[in-house]
Length: 296
Image 1: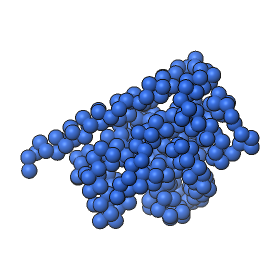
Image 2 (image 1 turned 90 degrees about the horizontal axis):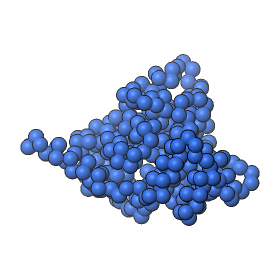
Image 3 (image 1 turned 90 degrees about the vertical axis):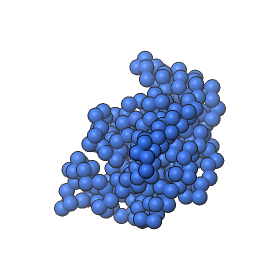
Image 4 (image 1 turned 120 degrees about the vertical axis):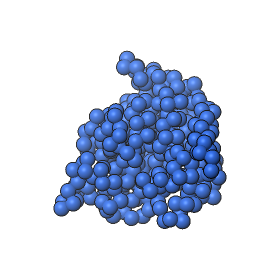
């Protein structure tokens, strides 16, 4: 085989990523404004209010059972103050990305399953980051929501190749998660969803906390920025897959050893991890509601 073919395939994939439309101007403006320390909730609310879809999504999210407020929140500014800038930034980004890939239908994967996994990872990331009070904890929900965006890019723009990846994984009874699945992606595509997602994050000028978690959530030890957040996403990602595949019982064998080691997991006393997993399972009831918030 021509040794240049694999590199040619990677070049084609990365060039196609470069052709993906930029984020809408209002989204870029919101992200830029949120990155300025002097920005106020009122200024951000004004920008969001220019887009009825984003306004609706922010209000649906804050009024979902995941946040548990007793009374209805009807003001975008109030919603921003409750959710926080970083969570709102994640909602705005995710809603825009969701819209970009709306109405996809593929034989090998249901896009709503992809988003359910992403939302469950986001919920788990928020719980873990809050419990452990890690740096960049406010970014945990949003980073968890976007960590696997490379998979959706590959499925949407390289459908036949990526369906080959999914079929190969199914043939070997490999769940679409972890280093074994990454190896299958590499063998067929000569790249994987973490690198493709990272390239898109760079193109869209996403915050470095997001691009790091997208790139390194399967190799958190390689992250140089916000490493503790990347480890949290890696653990929440594993929890999400345990829930998604109906295990619903904590099993440390499904969590990467380096992640367990980083968080000082004690196999003689797994109770603290079991309790965290149960808490994420309990919050998973809100996944469908949050999915509706993003998609309508």
